[in-house]
Image (tube, rainbow, N blue to C red; front, side):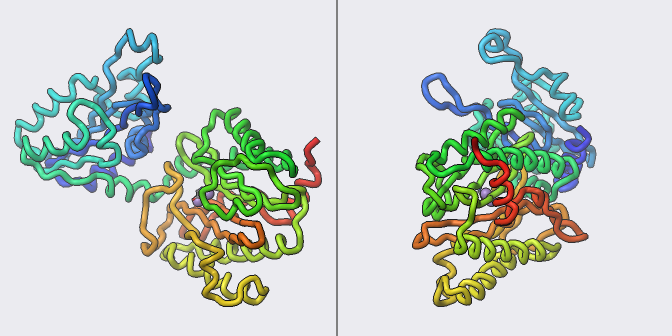
Length: 414
Ligand code: GLY
Ligand code: MN
Ligand code: MN
Protein backbone atom coordinates (compact mmCIF):
# COMPACT_ATOMS: atom_id res chain seq x y z
CA UNK A 1 0.00 0.00 0.00
CA UNK A 2 2.85 2.37 0.87
CA UNK A 3 4.39 1.77 -2.55
CA UNK A 4 1.21 2.82 -4.34
CA UNK A 5 1.03 6.02 -2.28
CA UNK A 6 4.67 6.76 -3.07
CA UNK A 7 4.17 6.14 -6.79
CA UNK A 8 1.12 8.41 -6.93
CA UNK A 9 3.03 11.11 -5.08
CA UNK A 10 5.72 11.02 -7.74
CA UNK A 11 3.07 11.33 -10.44
CA UNK A 12 1.43 14.25 -8.64
CA UNK A 13 4.79 16.00 -8.63
CA UNK A 14 4.96 15.77 -12.42
CA UNK A 15 1.48 17.25 -12.92
CA UNK A 16 0.86 20.95 -13.49
CA UNK A 17 -1.08 22.70 -10.78
CA UNK A 18 -4.88 23.04 -11.26
CA UNK A 19 -5.07 19.75 -13.11
CA UNK A 20 -6.75 16.34 -13.07
CA UNK A 21 -5.33 13.00 -14.20
CA UNK A 22 -7.41 9.95 -15.17
CA UNK A 23 -6.28 6.31 -15.40
CA UNK A 24 -8.74 3.52 -16.33
CA UNK A 25 -8.47 -0.10 -15.24
CA UNK A 26 -10.11 -1.22 -18.50
CA UNK A 27 -12.95 -3.63 -18.97
CA UNK A 28 -13.66 -7.26 -19.74
CA UNK A 29 -13.26 -7.99 -23.43
CA UNK A 30 -15.80 -10.11 -25.28
CA UNK A 31 -14.55 -13.47 -26.53
CA UNK A 32 -17.67 -14.93 -28.14
CA UNK A 33 -21.41 -14.97 -27.41
CA UNK A 34 -21.65 -14.24 -23.67
CA UNK A 35 -18.09 -15.32 -22.87
CA UNK A 36 -15.32 -12.83 -22.07
CA UNK A 37 -11.55 -13.20 -21.86
CA UNK A 38 -10.15 -13.30 -18.33
CA UNK A 39 -9.78 -9.72 -17.11
CA UNK A 40 -6.39 -8.13 -17.77
CA UNK A 41 -6.00 -4.91 -15.85
CA UNK A 42 -4.33 -1.87 -17.39
CA UNK A 43 -0.85 -2.18 -15.90
CA UNK A 44 -0.56 1.59 -15.46
CA UNK A 45 -3.68 1.53 -13.29
CA UNK A 46 -2.43 -1.48 -11.32
CA UNK A 47 0.97 0.16 -10.82
CA UNK A 48 -0.66 3.17 -9.20
CA UNK A 49 -3.34 1.41 -7.13
CA UNK A 50 -2.70 -2.34 -6.75
CA UNK A 51 -6.39 -2.73 -7.61
CA UNK A 52 -7.25 -5.47 -10.10
CA UNK A 53 -10.89 -4.74 -10.87
CA UNK A 54 -12.72 -4.08 -14.15
CA UNK A 55 -13.95 -0.55 -14.87
CA UNK A 56 -12.26 1.08 -11.89
CA UNK A 57 -11.00 4.63 -12.41
CA UNK A 58 -8.24 6.54 -10.66
CA UNK A 59 -8.47 10.34 -10.57
CA UNK A 60 -5.68 12.54 -9.25
CA UNK A 61 -6.68 16.13 -8.48
CA UNK A 62 -3.96 18.74 -8.02
CA UNK A 63 -5.51 21.96 -6.81
CA UNK A 64 -3.63 24.88 -5.30
CA UNK A 65 -0.68 22.50 -4.89
CA UNK A 66 -2.81 20.16 -2.76
CA UNK A 67 -3.16 16.52 -3.76
CA UNK A 68 -6.54 14.82 -3.68
CA UNK A 69 -7.04 11.24 -4.86
CA UNK A 70 -10.28 9.58 -5.92
CA UNK A 71 -10.88 5.96 -6.79
CA UNK A 72 -14.09 4.73 -8.43
CA UNK A 73 -15.19 1.10 -8.34
CA UNK A 74 -18.21 -0.65 -9.85
CA UNK A 75 -21.50 -0.23 -8.03
CA UNK A 76 -22.32 -3.45 -6.23
CA UNK A 77 -24.89 -5.42 -8.22
CA UNK A 78 -26.30 -8.23 -6.03
CA UNK A 79 -27.84 -10.03 -9.00
CA UNK A 80 -24.68 -10.06 -11.12
CA UNK A 81 -22.61 -10.98 -8.08
CA UNK A 82 -24.64 -14.21 -7.90
CA UNK A 83 -23.42 -15.07 -11.39
CA UNK A 84 -19.92 -13.61 -11.58
CA UNK A 85 -18.64 -13.34 -8.02
CA UNK A 86 -18.20 -10.50 -5.60
CA UNK A 87 -17.27 -7.02 -6.73
CA UNK A 88 -14.57 -5.12 -4.89
CA UNK A 89 -16.07 -3.07 -2.08
CA UNK A 90 -15.07 0.48 -1.22
CA UNK A 91 -13.39 -0.76 1.96
CA UNK A 92 -11.37 -3.40 0.09
CA UNK A 93 -10.28 -0.90 -2.55
CA UNK A 94 -9.26 1.50 0.19
CA UNK A 95 -7.21 -1.12 2.03
CA UNK A 96 -5.34 -2.22 -1.10
CA UNK A 97 -4.64 1.18 -2.61
CA UNK A 98 -4.29 3.44 0.41
CA UNK A 99 -6.82 5.82 -1.17
CA UNK A 100 -9.23 7.20 1.42
CA UNK A 101 -11.82 8.54 -0.97
CA UNK A 102 -13.38 5.63 -2.82
CA UNK A 103 -16.63 6.24 -4.71
CA UNK A 104 -18.93 4.08 -6.78
CA UNK A 105 -18.89 4.65 -10.53
CA UNK A 106 -22.44 5.97 -10.54
CA UNK A 107 -21.01 9.07 -8.82
CA UNK A 108 -18.33 9.62 -11.46
CA UNK A 109 -20.16 11.96 -13.84
CA UNK A 110 -21.64 14.11 -11.11
CA UNK A 111 -18.36 14.61 -9.31
CA UNK A 112 -16.56 15.37 -12.53
CA UNK A 113 -19.20 17.88 -13.57
CA UNK A 114 -19.04 19.59 -10.19
CA UNK A 115 -15.29 19.90 -10.29
CA UNK A 116 -15.12 21.13 -13.87
CA UNK A 117 -17.90 23.71 -13.56
CA UNK A 118 -15.98 25.44 -10.82
CA UNK A 119 -13.60 26.36 -13.59
CA UNK A 120 -10.45 25.86 -11.62
CA UNK A 121 -9.06 23.04 -13.72
CA UNK A 122 -6.63 24.18 -16.40
CA UNK A 123 -5.09 20.88 -17.56
CA UNK A 124 -6.29 17.33 -17.89
CA UNK A 125 -4.17 14.21 -18.28
CA UNK A 126 -5.68 10.97 -19.55
CA UNK A 127 -3.79 7.66 -19.70
CA UNK A 128 -4.16 6.49 -23.29
CA UNK A 129 -3.47 2.79 -22.57
CA UNK A 130 -7.05 1.55 -22.27
CA UNK A 131 -8.99 4.41 -23.75
CA UNK A 132 -10.74 2.65 -26.56
CA UNK A 133 -11.54 -0.55 -24.68
CA UNK A 134 -13.01 0.83 -21.52
CA UNK A 135 -16.75 1.30 -21.64
CA UNK A 136 -17.17 3.24 -18.45
CA UNK A 137 -19.83 5.81 -19.31
CA UNK A 138 -18.32 8.39 -21.57
CA UNK A 139 -14.73 7.17 -21.53
CA UNK A 140 -12.82 6.06 -24.57
CA UNK A 141 -11.75 8.62 -27.09
CA UNK A 142 -15.11 10.19 -26.38
CA UNK A 143 -14.06 10.97 -22.85
CA UNK A 144 -10.95 12.87 -23.89
CA UNK A 145 -12.97 14.59 -26.63
CA UNK A 146 -15.72 15.65 -24.29
CA UNK A 147 -13.12 17.18 -22.00
CA UNK A 148 -11.74 19.08 -24.96
CA UNK A 149 -15.04 20.09 -26.54
CA UNK A 150 -17.39 20.56 -23.64
CA UNK A 151 -14.90 22.00 -21.21
CA UNK A 152 -12.39 23.45 -23.66
CA UNK A 153 -9.60 21.82 -21.72
CA UNK A 154 -6.25 20.80 -23.18
CA UNK A 155 -5.91 17.03 -22.75
CA UNK A 156 -2.43 15.61 -22.33
CA UNK A 157 -1.42 11.96 -22.44
CA UNK A 158 -0.54 10.65 -18.98
CA UNK A 159 1.02 7.50 -20.41
CA UNK A 160 4.58 8.80 -20.83
CA UNK A 161 4.61 10.17 -17.29
CA UNK A 162 3.56 6.81 -15.84
CA UNK A 163 5.90 4.91 -18.16
CA UNK A 164 8.80 7.01 -16.89
CA UNK A 165 8.01 5.94 -13.34
CA UNK A 166 7.49 2.28 -14.25
CA UNK A 167 10.90 2.12 -15.93
CA UNK A 168 12.61 2.48 -12.54
CA UNK A 169 11.68 -0.45 -10.31
CA UNK A 170 11.23 -0.08 -6.57
CA UNK A 171 12.01 -2.70 -3.92
CA UNK A 172 8.56 -4.32 -4.03
CA UNK A 173 8.77 -4.69 -7.80
CA UNK A 174 12.20 -6.33 -7.62
CA UNK A 175 10.81 -8.78 -5.04
CA UNK A 176 7.92 -9.69 -7.34
CA UNK A 177 10.24 -10.12 -10.32
CA UNK A 178 12.49 -12.40 -8.27
CA UNK A 179 9.48 -14.48 -7.20
CA UNK A 180 8.39 -14.82 -10.85
CA UNK A 181 11.92 -15.86 -11.82
CA UNK A 182 12.05 -18.46 -9.04
CA UNK A 183 8.81 -20.08 -10.21
CA UNK A 184 10.17 -20.02 -13.77
CA UNK A 185 13.30 -21.82 -12.59
CA UNK A 186 11.33 -24.58 -10.91
CA UNK A 187 9.10 -24.99 -13.95
CA UNK A 188 12.10 -24.99 -16.29
CA UNK A 189 13.74 -27.79 -14.31
CA UNK A 190 10.51 -29.79 -14.54
CA UNK A 191 10.79 -29.50 -18.34
CA UNK A 192 14.42 -30.58 -18.28
CA UNK A 193 13.65 -33.64 -16.16
CA UNK A 194 11.02 -34.72 -18.65
CA UNK A 195 12.90 -34.10 -21.88
CA UNK A 196 13.40 -36.94 -24.31
CA UNK A 197 13.32 -37.20 -28.08
CA UNK A 198 10.09 -38.67 -29.41
CA UNK A 199 7.97 -36.58 -27.09
CA UNK A 200 5.99 -33.68 -28.46
CA UNK A 201 6.99 -30.08 -27.75
CA UNK A 202 3.66 -29.51 -26.02
CA UNK A 203 4.48 -32.21 -23.50
CA UNK A 204 7.30 -30.01 -22.18
CA UNK A 205 4.89 -27.08 -22.20
CA UNK A 206 2.54 -29.11 -20.01
CA UNK A 207 5.32 -29.75 -17.46
CA UNK A 208 6.06 -26.03 -17.31
CA UNK A 209 2.45 -24.96 -17.00
CA UNK A 210 1.72 -27.52 -14.31
CA UNK A 211 4.30 -25.96 -12.00
CA UNK A 212 2.97 -22.46 -12.70
CA UNK A 213 -0.54 -23.53 -11.87
CA UNK A 214 0.64 -25.00 -8.58
CA UNK A 215 1.79 -21.50 -7.63
CA UNK A 216 -1.34 -19.86 -9.03
CA UNK A 217 0.96 -18.13 -11.50
CA UNK A 218 0.11 -17.41 -15.13
CA UNK A 219 2.50 -17.46 -18.09
CA UNK A 220 3.89 -14.01 -18.88
CA UNK A 221 3.50 -14.72 -22.62
CA UNK A 222 2.80 -17.56 -25.05
CA UNK A 223 5.67 -19.88 -24.32
CA UNK A 224 8.00 -21.22 -26.98
CA UNK A 225 9.19 -24.83 -27.07
CA UNK A 226 10.97 -25.16 -30.40
CA UNK A 227 13.06 -28.17 -31.32
CA UNK A 228 15.46 -28.28 -34.27
CA UNK A 229 15.01 -25.74 -37.07
CA UNK A 230 11.71 -24.48 -35.65
CA UNK A 231 13.82 -22.55 -33.14
CA UNK A 232 14.77 -20.22 -36.00
CA UNK A 233 11.20 -18.85 -35.99
CA UNK A 234 11.38 -16.21 -33.28
CA UNK A 235 7.72 -16.40 -32.30
CA UNK A 236 7.10 -20.13 -32.76
CA UNK A 237 4.27 -20.84 -30.32
CA UNK A 238 2.56 -23.84 -31.92
CA UNK A 239 4.73 -26.26 -29.90
CA UNK A 240 2.98 -29.13 -31.68
CA UNK A 241 5.79 -31.11 -33.32
CA UNK A 242 7.66 -34.21 -32.14
CA UNK A 243 11.15 -33.63 -30.77
CA UNK A 244 13.82 -35.15 -33.00
CA UNK A 245 16.73 -37.20 -31.63
CA UNK A 246 19.92 -35.35 -30.67
CA UNK A 247 18.49 -31.99 -31.55
CA UNK A 248 18.51 -28.74 -29.58
CA UNK A 249 15.35 -27.46 -27.91
CA UNK A 250 14.95 -23.74 -27.46
CA UNK A 251 12.54 -22.73 -24.69
CA UNK A 252 11.52 -19.12 -24.08
CA UNK A 253 9.30 -19.03 -21.02
CA UNK A 254 8.20 -16.90 -18.08
CA UNK A 255 6.00 -17.08 -15.02
CA UNK A 256 4.29 -14.07 -13.46
CA UNK A 257 3.88 -12.96 -9.91
CA UNK A 258 1.28 -10.24 -9.30
CA UNK A 259 1.60 -9.43 -13.02
CA UNK A 260 5.39 -9.06 -12.85
CA UNK A 261 6.96 -11.05 -15.68
CA UNK A 262 9.97 -13.30 -15.88
CA UNK A 263 11.37 -13.78 -19.38
CA UNK A 264 13.89 -16.61 -19.58
CA UNK A 265 15.30 -18.54 -22.53
CA UNK A 266 17.32 -21.71 -22.27
CA UNK A 267 18.52 -24.18 -24.89
CA UNK A 268 19.23 -27.84 -24.19
CA UNK A 269 19.70 -31.16 -26.04
CA UNK A 270 16.81 -33.54 -26.59
CA UNK A 271 18.77 -36.53 -25.31
CA UNK A 272 20.87 -35.00 -22.58
CA UNK A 273 24.12 -34.55 -24.51
CA UNK A 274 25.29 -31.67 -26.74
CA UNK A 275 27.15 -32.52 -29.97
CA UNK A 276 30.51 -30.78 -30.51
CA UNK A 277 28.95 -28.37 -32.97
CA UNK A 278 26.05 -27.57 -30.65
CA UNK A 279 28.45 -27.08 -27.74
CA UNK A 280 30.67 -24.74 -29.77
CA UNK A 281 27.75 -22.54 -30.81
CA UNK A 282 26.34 -22.54 -27.26
CA UNK A 283 29.78 -21.30 -26.15
CA UNK A 284 29.69 -18.45 -28.67
CA UNK A 285 26.27 -17.33 -27.39
CA UNK A 286 27.33 -17.62 -23.75
CA UNK A 287 30.43 -15.53 -24.42
CA UNK A 288 28.20 -12.84 -25.96
CA UNK A 289 25.97 -13.07 -22.92
CA UNK A 290 28.87 -12.56 -20.48
CA UNK A 291 30.15 -9.57 -22.45
CA UNK A 292 26.74 -7.92 -22.54
CA UNK A 293 25.93 -8.54 -18.87
CA UNK A 294 29.26 -7.07 -17.85
CA UNK A 295 28.45 -3.99 -19.96
CA UNK A 296 25.03 -3.49 -18.32
CA UNK A 297 26.11 -0.34 -16.50
CA UNK A 298 24.36 2.94 -15.78
CA UNK A 299 24.71 5.25 -18.80
CA UNK A 300 25.00 2.50 -21.42
CA UNK A 301 22.34 2.20 -24.16
CA UNK A 302 20.61 -0.95 -25.40
CA UNK A 303 21.85 -0.08 -28.89
CA UNK A 304 25.40 -0.31 -27.55
CA UNK A 305 24.66 -3.68 -25.93
CA UNK A 306 23.39 -5.00 -29.23
CA UNK A 307 26.49 -3.78 -31.06
CA UNK A 308 28.60 -5.80 -28.62
CA UNK A 309 26.75 -8.96 -29.61
CA UNK A 310 27.12 -8.30 -33.31
CA UNK A 311 30.83 -7.50 -33.03
CA UNK A 312 31.42 -10.64 -30.97
CA UNK A 313 29.59 -12.81 -33.50
CA UNK A 314 31.42 -11.17 -36.41
CA UNK A 315 34.74 -12.11 -34.90
CA UNK A 316 33.95 -15.56 -33.51
CA UNK A 317 31.69 -16.97 -36.22
CA UNK A 318 34.09 -16.00 -39.00
CA UNK A 319 37.05 -17.44 -37.04
CA UNK A 320 35.17 -20.70 -36.46
CA UNK A 321 34.06 -20.89 -40.09
CA UNK A 322 30.29 -20.78 -39.45
CA UNK A 323 30.02 -17.70 -41.69
CA UNK A 324 32.36 -16.41 -44.38
CA UNK A 325 31.96 -12.66 -43.92
CA UNK A 326 31.07 -10.37 -41.01
CA UNK A 327 28.09 -9.04 -42.97
CA UNK A 328 26.41 -12.46 -42.70
CA UNK A 329 25.78 -12.07 -38.96
CA UNK A 330 22.40 -10.50 -39.59
CA UNK A 331 21.30 -13.74 -41.30
CA UNK A 332 21.90 -15.73 -38.12
CA UNK A 333 21.04 -13.12 -35.46
CA UNK A 334 18.01 -11.01 -36.30
CA UNK A 335 16.55 -9.51 -33.13
CA UNK A 336 17.73 -7.09 -30.46
CA UNK A 337 19.56 -8.23 -27.33
CA UNK A 338 17.51 -6.35 -24.72
CA UNK A 339 14.16 -4.95 -23.74
CA UNK A 340 12.72 -3.59 -20.53
CA UNK A 341 10.97 -6.05 -18.22
CA UNK A 342 8.35 -5.50 -15.53
CA UNK A 343 4.56 -5.49 -15.43
CA UNK A 344 4.72 -6.23 -19.16
CA UNK A 345 7.15 -8.65 -20.78
CA UNK A 346 8.10 -5.99 -23.26
CA UNK A 347 7.83 -3.33 -20.63
CA UNK A 348 7.45 0.41 -20.99
CA UNK A 349 10.59 2.44 -20.87
CA UNK A 350 13.30 3.90 -22.94
CA UNK A 351 14.15 3.72 -26.57
CA UNK A 352 17.28 1.94 -27.74
CA UNK A 353 19.38 5.07 -27.52
CA UNK A 354 18.47 6.25 -24.03
CA UNK A 355 21.08 5.57 -21.34
CA UNK A 356 20.17 3.00 -18.71
CA UNK A 357 19.65 4.19 -15.14
CA UNK A 358 19.74 2.43 -11.78
CA UNK A 359 16.49 0.55 -11.18
CA UNK A 360 15.95 -0.47 -14.81
CA UNK A 361 15.40 -4.19 -15.33
CA UNK A 362 16.26 -5.46 -18.79
CA UNK A 363 16.65 -8.77 -20.54
CA UNK A 364 19.89 -9.93 -22.11
CA UNK A 365 19.07 -12.46 -24.80
CA UNK A 366 21.64 -13.16 -27.49
CA UNK A 367 20.71 -15.88 -29.95
CA UNK A 368 22.01 -17.69 -33.02
CA UNK A 369 19.80 -19.25 -35.67
CA UNK A 370 21.21 -21.57 -38.32
CA UNK A 371 18.44 -23.05 -40.41
CA UNK A 372 21.11 -24.83 -42.45
CA UNK A 373 22.24 -26.66 -39.29
CA UNK A 374 18.67 -27.27 -38.14
CA UNK A 375 19.22 -25.41 -34.86
CA UNK A 376 18.45 -22.23 -33.00
CA UNK A 377 19.93 -21.12 -29.68
CA UNK A 378 18.73 -18.33 -27.40
CA UNK A 379 19.82 -17.75 -23.83
CA UNK A 380 18.05 -15.03 -21.87
CA UNK A 381 18.61 -13.64 -18.39
CA UNK A 382 16.93 -10.80 -16.48
CA UNK A 383 19.28 -8.07 -15.27
CA UNK A 384 18.80 -5.31 -12.70
CA UNK A 385 20.86 -2.19 -13.37
CA UNK A 386 22.38 -0.66 -10.22
CA UNK A 387 24.96 2.01 -9.45
CA UNK A 388 27.22 -0.83 -8.31
CA UNK A 389 26.88 -2.70 -11.63
CA UNK A 390 24.59 -5.38 -13.06
CA UNK A 391 22.71 -7.86 -10.87
CA UNK A 392 21.69 -10.99 -12.73
CA UNK A 393 18.32 -11.89 -11.17
CA UNK A 394 18.23 -15.23 -13.01
CA UNK A 395 21.83 -16.27 -12.45
CA UNK A 396 20.72 -19.43 -10.63
CA UNK A 397 18.87 -20.86 -13.63
CA UNK A 398 21.35 -23.27 -15.17
CA UNK A 399 22.45 -22.50 -18.71
CA UNK A 400 25.93 -23.80 -19.55
CA UNK A 401 26.26 -27.08 -21.48
CA UNK A 402 28.13 -28.64 -18.54
CA UNK A 403 25.47 -27.71 -15.97
CA UNK A 404 22.60 -28.76 -18.24
CA UNK A 405 24.18 -32.10 -19.17
CA UNK A 406 24.91 -32.81 -15.54
CA UNK A 407 21.34 -32.06 -14.50
CA UNK A 408 19.84 -34.09 -17.34
CA UNK A 409 22.09 -37.06 -16.66
CA UNK A 410 21.08 -37.08 -13.02
CA UNK A 411 17.38 -36.55 -13.69
CA UNK A 412 16.53 -38.75 -16.66
CA UNK A 413 12.86 -39.28 -17.44
CA UNK A 414 11.63 -42.60 -16.09
N1 GLY B 1 9.68 -13.89 -24.78
C1 GLY B 1 9.72 -12.73 -25.56
C2 GLY B 1 11.03 -12.12 -25.60
O1 GLY B 1 12.01 -12.76 -25.25
O2 GLY B 1 11.18 -10.97 -25.90
MN1 MN C 1 11.93 -14.37 -23.95
MN1 MN D 1 12.77 -11.21 -23.96
